[in-house]
Image 1 (cartoon, rainbow, N blue to C red):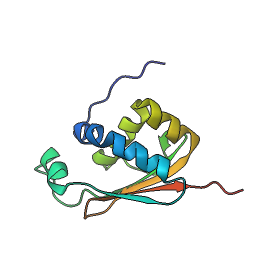
Image 2 (image 1 turned 135 degrees about the horizontal axis):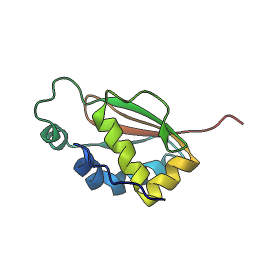
Image 3 (image 1 turned 90 degrees about the vertical axis):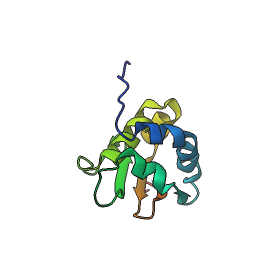
Image 4 (image 1 turned 180 degrees about the horizontal axis):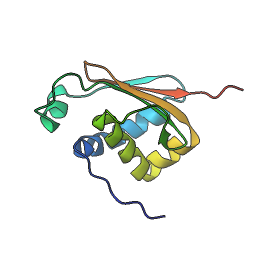
Length: 115
């Protein structure tokens, strides 16, 4: 299957943190994981942006199940995961909630399906 490489504004940021994010996804199987991102790195991606970079991204079967059309940073994160071989496998097999708060704290939670 061919998938075009989508390069969004935040793609370089998510590419840099890809190994750490994949580890968070894997480790979230046992408990929620957090990772502090560097505010200056994110802000430098969009110096004109007013307001918050925070977002909530719910992923199931490789797709966002919540509305992220107004969050370019969340869309670029999802694109990076879909294009990474390991990321794609993880988001196909599991449900995740990934959020970033106004303090640039990334939280990854694996949502267990109800038995």
